[in-house]
Amino acid sequence: MTILNDFTQVLTIAGSDSDGSAGAQADLKTFMARGVYGMSVLTAAVAGNSYGIHDSINMPSSFIKNEIKDIKDDFEVSAFKTGMLSDSEIIHTVAEAIKDKPFGTFILDPVIITKHGAMLLEADAYQTLIDELFPLADLITPNFYEAKKLSGLNLENKEEIIKAAHKLRNLGPKNIMIKGEHSDDSISEVEDYVLLEDGQSFWISEPFVKTDHINGTGDTLSSCIVAEIAKGKSMEDAIKIAKTFTYNAIKNEIDVGHKYGPINHFIKDDIQ
Ligand code: PXL
Image 1 (tube, rainbow, N blue to C red):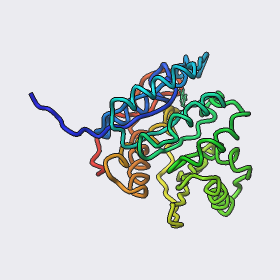
Image 2 (cartoon, rainbow, N blue to C red; image 1 turned 180 degrees about the vertical axis):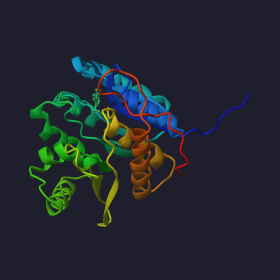
Image 3 (cartoon, rainbow, N blue to C red; image 1 turned 135 degrees about the horizontal axis):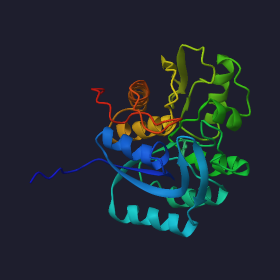
């Protein structure tokens, strides 16, 4: 029998998506693909498939607290992320439970809305997210829409995106990654902007892939960053690896579901 010692341990605090394409399921698949041991604290569960989300429930705060306590009591988590947090009460519960930094590096994916328009965070909870979790975050990864909502800026050009990143960083997160706009099918590249803790910044892009299979893209990117940080990569390297991994997962489509399908976590690549 082979025993794998010192396995790198990571955690997602997120919602369950029944069709396996997004949320905690996408995170756990990414953790597996990147060779780390993944755990999941569920905040909510959505009933959905490739046509969309049709129902959802939130976990009670007392249950979320117990899930986090059980991980704390028994595991050595090196890095973790948050995804769907639903409302202010859940954000507050999670913030209280992680404020003593029990799980290492914290990647906050400020999940607000799905690609197909389902709201995963109540509008009156944006400020709670900013007040209670931004100051604890090592990195936030808003998409274009979330960056607009959270910064209050229109992001009409590159200067505005840069301005939004600085504005968001002034709210507490150490590093910022604003993911590029891709609602217009005529673009050729999806370009993200990264502002690092030391003040350095860069644009990072991959070709735009015209496909309906993009569920779980943001979840996969942030959980890949978690995995790479946990394995010892720098923030910059982890972001670059995650961008390439996610692009490969989009490019190598798998054919499940009948409408907006998942990306492909089975891809074998040699991104180190
Ligand atoms: O991809 C965003 C997302 C996050 N979390 C859950 C989801 C989705 C999108 O469907 O269902 C639980």
